[in-house]
Length: 174
Image 1 (tube, rainbow, N blue to C red):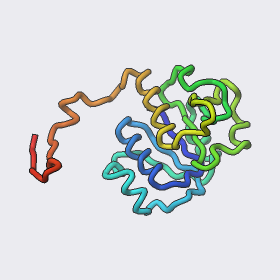
Image 2: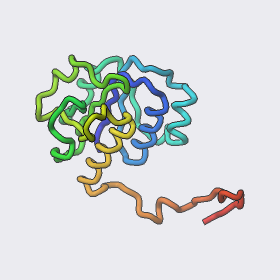
Image 3: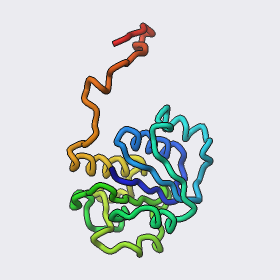
């Protein structure tokens, strides 16, 4: 399990999607204030669907309080970094730090990380960045892949009890 840290996230649906990601991958989510939305925002709830209660999420007043709580290796993600996220052998309790959607991590935050702990996701030329939820997903799944998807459900466990309805409205029960 890694820790995902979002510093000043601004867009509720992105954070909602990451609540769902963390529930599905078994990782903790840490939000650093100020947030650009309220925790009772309907778009946050919609993005996270029914995964809110399955996610360990903590809101912190500042990055210093997160640092005091988490003792693992820390990695900052920035489009200005040169070391690729795939060049790291991730470990249990690593801390993955991402900035807000509009501007990424502030310089005062990135200055706290040396080149070895400052990572990037490669992009095609003339592109600025990935969506925050997509970027976090890319890195989290790489870390989980390296851990051989430890804790993942078997296919039969994922679909047990699956019920719902087909596109034409016909109910189904596995």
